[in-house]
Amino acid sequence: MAHLNLGVFISGRGTNLQSIIDACEAGKIDASVAVVISDQAEAYGLERARKHNISPIHVPVGKNNTPKYDEADRRQLEILREYQVDLVCLAGYMRRVGRAVLEGYAEAILNIHPALLPSFPGTHGQGDAADYGVKVSGCTVHLAWPKFDTGPIIIQAAVPVLEDDDGDSLADRILRQEHKIYPQAIQWFAEGRLQIEGRCVTVKDARPPTIAEAIISPGLEI
Ligand code: GAR
Image (cartoon, rainbow, N blue to C red; front, side, top):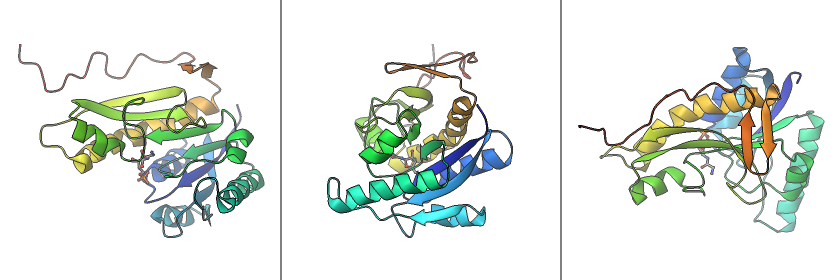
């Protein structure tokens, strides 16, 4: 596939957006960010876009299934078309994507989630995992389907949960992996290497997992 135009949706500080911009600018991925759309006017991610001469656009979104929500959905699709976006990347976008965008970009919307889906979907993946007491958590990049956090999984990274972790410390450890796996998933998409069958994704000619064996947490002593 040729060079990809990305449309990135954010709601907040935009560190994943930054990792995508950096990977594009470093030539690690065959893409560039054409537009950043935020539902929050004050999102720092909009400032990051400005610093890289990327159009930052605030689209206020109403509650689900209200006229304002549907209007925002249509406006987002218009913007994506205007910027000739090939792939939509949800990067800390804390809203449901509307029907117009989902249908306009079927199988061309990626999302990053800070837990090992299907565990701990929703907006507090890291805190929910820490509170549940799991010993391993991580992050997931998947294709967005209409039902939140359910689409086919492209790549996951697992990290240990440590004894004294709370949601914040676990979130930091997970975030470092998010910044690695999201640009990688985009590059596989750009290269046309994702083969999707039902809910299973195969990466054509994928390398073996980066950690060859298991993460066991806490560590083994015998
Ligand atoms: C990231 O941890 C991302 O995985 C999460 O929000 C954070 C955004 O951080 N997304 C979700 O929880 C979606 N359900 P960022 O703005 O620094 O990229």
